[in-house]
Picture 1: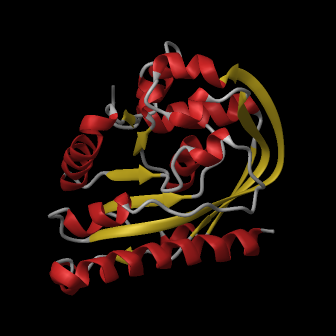
Picture 2: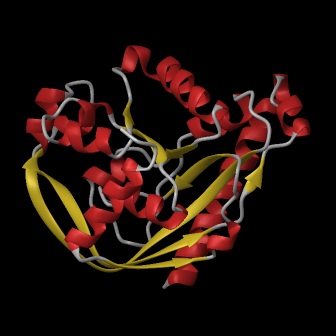
Length: 239
């Protein structure tokens, strides 16, 4: 697979779906450096949208089940995603894969809200609490000139389908509690969407030095709060 194949697949998918896309503040995108992209997340279209906005392949960490379901597995691999391992090996594998990608100046994409907003349909302006993994990755990765880039995906028009029973996904990933409930997995399809690029957060030597001992929690929290605030502000601006 060529380096730009995931970007091409993303652009083709958006064209096939007929989605009208509008990109804002693309001048904020870091060039020629490793980047961790973090974004709100409600749709399977979010990864292709972010690649189209950045005009670069983005290697997304995606849920374990996506690497288990036939058909879906092939799509996420073509998009350049790396499905997370089963829970007992998930954290170690995530950091290992992501750091290797960042060390070769690639872009790693993370949806820090996790699976919840994908399974429980939320309002377009709603954002859930962020998991902390992306901040630990940014501060732990031995990579110079590393930026964390918050991005807001603002749906203006969309349709929702419910094609997959949750318990069917539970067969492929019994470790996910969300798949043990009744109901159907929503599929949000954007008809018109804005993608707004936030101000990058550059990881400094001082922050890495502070990522030790009692100060580590404060440094992680500061990074998470910065990204959350930036994405929330952009969501409001987009509407």
